[in-house]
Length: 434
Ligand code: SF4
Ligand code: SF4
Image (cartoon, rainbow, N blue to C red):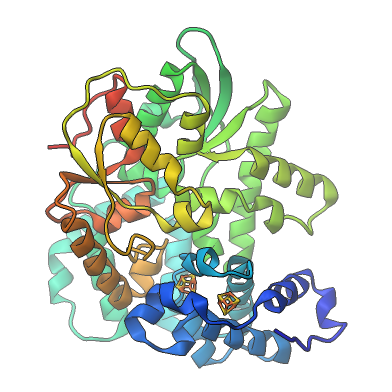
């Protein structure tokens, strides 16, 4: 694709990167067929190719984002299915991240939407605030059906109340800063990202991860100062808060790397993993020492499934006779290109595995998407659950808290993959397993 950026525009590193990305696109349109919003809406402007044209035009013109561009970019899930499909290697993620930041800087959203986005940014990344907000949402849940109107604000409020769980598990002391010693001979030392929303919604995921890794001979450190990876803000175009959160993690893990050393930074929420693995890019224009630290952290970032494979996960219990429908989180299959690794682990653990039709399509979770775009997210959820249901499996396994929350509450129990693997290696049976 030809671009017409001026030399002055290209002095901006983000524009220079977007120019590179745009120039790799040959506008073949192959990506449209696997884009969830194009599949649902059938509008070229809600396809990757359409969005690429809109973003190109917006950036080249240098004018503020228009309402139409914002609408179509907002509808993008950042699922990155288009990156898996694209034969030319277009790095759509960097392009849309830049577009979202540009939109936030040049476009004024309606007041209610601005307030909601600000609220999400102030609450979701912080476990204490998140817990308080969910407690309030639980009280308000019965009133969700009484919120009148079909306006976007009303839809969003109803979606937020619907997503709030009925009850919250108590905080887990295992997630506090500290060191969990390896059992037996120490084979390695890793840091665990305990995350933000996940540690409130499902502390059992971090507990299972710590039990499993320490049993396998890995020392697990929960580093003081680590927290939200920044993805939630990053995907809303909130550049400065996202960088602040990411920077805190880089500083915390750098202290460990330069102290007792780390073999990996383990991440068990794949949405976060995709972002941490991109820290090198996010910080590339910062001062060289910080950029180098960010790249080093990014290089150590591993999904839990990669670490379990590397350290030869082995079950110790007999196969449970359960059939698992594996839901591939977009951030794992498209963002990190980890498709076979989690499935191989589940099979090794003794589960019979089934895969749903349209496994490449997003479930509609996508960070804050299911709150900000509830209608599309709801359609994708229903489609995904129907496909999962047709597998006739006993339960659904996935490697991302967002997907688990999005798919919960229907016929099939939903469990994080690592909880099943921990169970088969001597841990407790996950509460959701029948
Ligand atoms: S498949 Fe790739 S090259 Fe083709 S239009 Fe989509 S992004 Fe561009
Ligand atoms: S990231 Fe997903 S929703 Fe966005 S354009 Fe690509 S395939 Fe479509």
